[in-house]
Image (cartoon, rainbow, N blue to C red; front, side, top):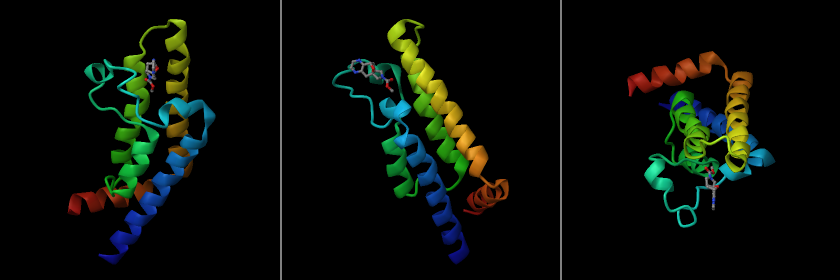
Length: 130
Ligand SMILES: COC(=O)N1C[C@@H]2C[C@@H]3O[C@]2(Cc2nccnc23)C1
């Protein structure tokens, strides 16, 4: 009903705020768009669920996430995939690995800083009702 729609609108605004903060951070430029599978032909053999910041924004607008936890599961794919695909401590991989860890820490710090646990509990309760 009405107040559920209001809550979901507030959730989408919250998730856009997080995603846009990360999108604007120059450290995370490599995570803003899908990996180019033409340039990187083996990427989809290694990574089964590609994810990136622009895809998160598209998913938010398509009402894919009704709780913060569902959003975090997709957002965590971004840095986890980078660690999986770029495993070596060799120089090229090392830079993207540092950026992946920085993305993980920034994502979870922004959520901890802005998320009211009562709000997430209300979203989870609504999910149970559906
Ligand atoms: C999140 O980004 C990544 O996981 N990657 C891995 C790919 C391997 C390497 O860097 C990426 C793009 C790329 N394109 C052309 C040639 N080599 C590369 C970005």
